[in-house]
Length: 369
Image (tube, rainbow, N blue to C red):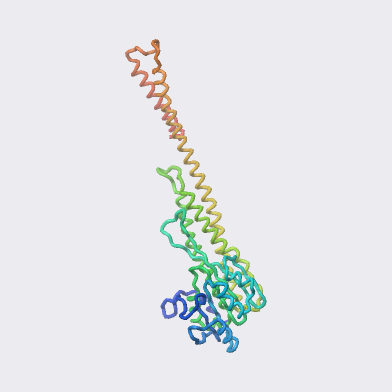
């Protein structure tokens, strides 16, 4: 147990122990799909040429002991066919790994565990708009065997090279074999979820503040553009599709004994499952809160429209008085009251003004103006 006491601390730092940044560029001499290929024995990466192939790696691992870790990025069917044949991967898992767009899951094929993780990256933006992209998604497929570990990554973000270097900095962790790498990747992915959830919280709070802030002069707020709220809700839904399906696989890895998962490593999957459960609660909360915000925004827009209609109606009622008087005295009759009276015009105008002021005061007292 002492060998993995600092397991979580080892896979979380973003810098090497010497303070420098990890290199995330593609390995020299690698093909268009193979990002890195190495053999680990007793937790130490064995020296090899830059052009080490997956076939040579697994043969060396089986000959000298240890395990091979092969990393690929968006391989084609032809590029992955040789790897699948050499490691005996199941055709269904191979198809999922090549074509991607899979739900997070954990499946067992003979002596191989196949796990799918969706990586989430927060897209920085100055202002949330109706077309803002808030999260980007990628995928990491992991094949865990007795003496090999294969990662197939899809998407432009979510590189695992820095994670590989961090594990290499603590060889005692890699002595636990491929299951230690599986845990490190799961922990890395879920840590990304936590960071994205915290960033999304700021966006949700910003929209909530704008919707419920008072309008001009303390009146009813006219809300915000509903398309912005809907766009944020869509991004949260995409985040939810990555988090929710992963709950069951994490429970299986943390609770059910598996031959390919070291018992000491399995205990640490419980911590990953706990963090994932917290993120899921946050995402569900975001979704429900955005539903409420959207409904409140639509209600505020409706109230604002009703208020506008009341004001328009009130002014129409006031204008109706002089319109009626002018209409009556605009008729061409010879015999009309006050038509030829010396004080007829000022009296009628005075009565009209008094009536208009009275109606205005009444409507304002009742909150229509």
